Image (cartoon, rainbow, N blue to C red; front, top):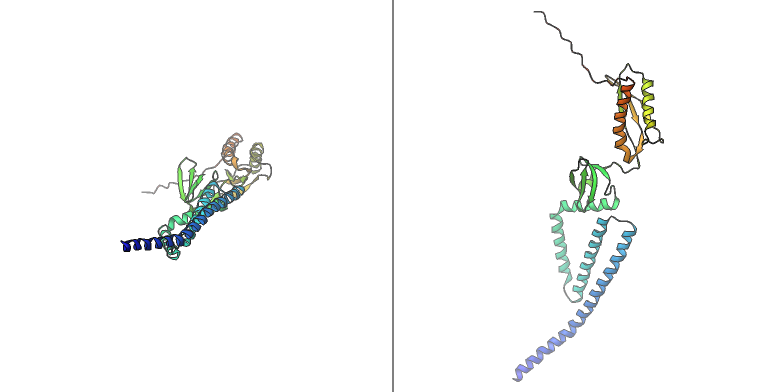
Length: 277
């Protein structure tokens, strides 16, 4: 009986010693952990306010907040584990190996992810812009972290990986406030060049959507096989590009018909020679 009592007392002493030894470490680690969580919330709020002031894209805004939060909390957990006596070197090595394995397995996705970050940071285009890229022309509906979604002019949905957009050529069609419309019209060699130039100038002057400054260029651009070609280059607001383009095509045809100006088309003379039998 005495021996069992001594054993119990011995184990109780060991437990109490461990409680004193580890209890203080655990309590200190818990204090640091909860203070760390509080600090992380404060830092995230400051970070969020800074991004709002700089008008960072909403998608990038949320993503960066989540990334910073995850990284900060992982560091806090490692600090907590170190304070309670866990060997953190092996833990960090395991996390590093896991990160490397995931990175190798997701090379394509990571390239698209990096491309998305670059697009959202440097803004070569934004949601609502009309762009030409990878053989497609369309309006940018949404810029996601991995892909950009376009809606083409005939209302098709196109999803393009961001790696292709960040590393390839992208034409932002309506990024500038004004654009030049390039139009070519052909007349026959028998028509009066000065008269035609006057007709084209009047059409340009009468169009309210065409800007007065800079002025439109109207000149003979080529002596083609079957026509004299005029190049007409007016400047317009970017939103008026297509109305002016298609409107000019119609107006010039109607004006040429009224003034008996010939619009030539390719012709071929065929000579038949009858062989003598």
